[in-house]
Length: 264
Ligand code: SAH
Image 1 (cartoon, helix red, strand yellow):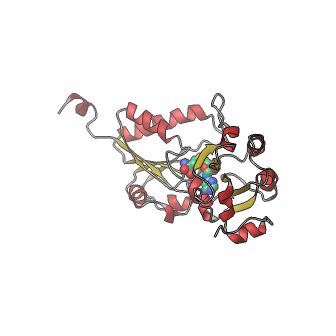
Image 2: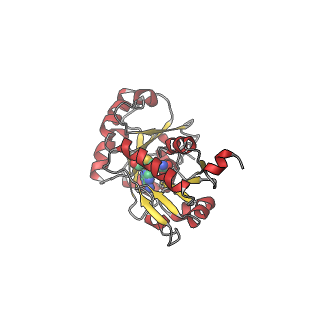
Image 3: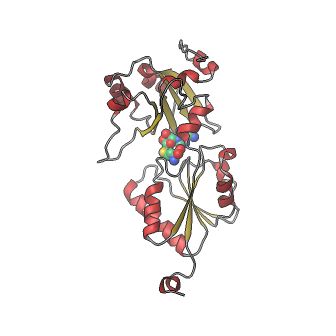
């Protein structure tokens, strides 16, 4: 046995698991297996209660959501907690909403765990940026409307660069915005300034694949007012681009828009 093996007799491992957007039927089979075998689970705010109900009754659930907390300190705390639990030999699952590597700080957690000599396995999940639009019939890369999609965040911490909205406005890509509610007014203004037409179709989908789902279909020019009027609350995905035309006909009609309902 070599020296490092003597220092840590068991191989510590953490599974970084994507819980998908809500509905437990959207978990991967691998995610379900990891949940069922978990002994310690560190859970974010956005994980649906129905997913947590799949954990074995004896699993220890540690809620490490960041709502209202001091983000940087808490992230370090989460790293330390994971490392401690993994070193104790427990089967540790780090459970995150959607996909762990899409706006989930999964990358930072992998770096911290590896630096501590702990193996990490990443179990991808269905990200809200795809699943929320799909829940109302929007195909984010429909080639009849857009050559691709950009996943961007509307929320930046101090010192982090904001997305270049004006460049995105000119990109022709479908824009899928995570965490964009509080900054919606500003990002709409930037997109308009970048040359995106005010009548560009836009959608907002809140709490997709949960019992609280709400959605609204509108235009870029009316997006901010629509969010207010339709009481769209976090967590929500914004979709901006011609692909929104493919939304379920009933929704587009409700919005009173002259959207082409099918490109056939
Ligand atoms: N890792 C997650 C994203 C985490 S960032 C993923 O891949 O989905 C948190 C943001 O994700 C929220 O502010 C919201 O923009 C979006 N989000 C997460 N779950 C959602 C859901 N069920 N419906 C709509 N948006 C959701």
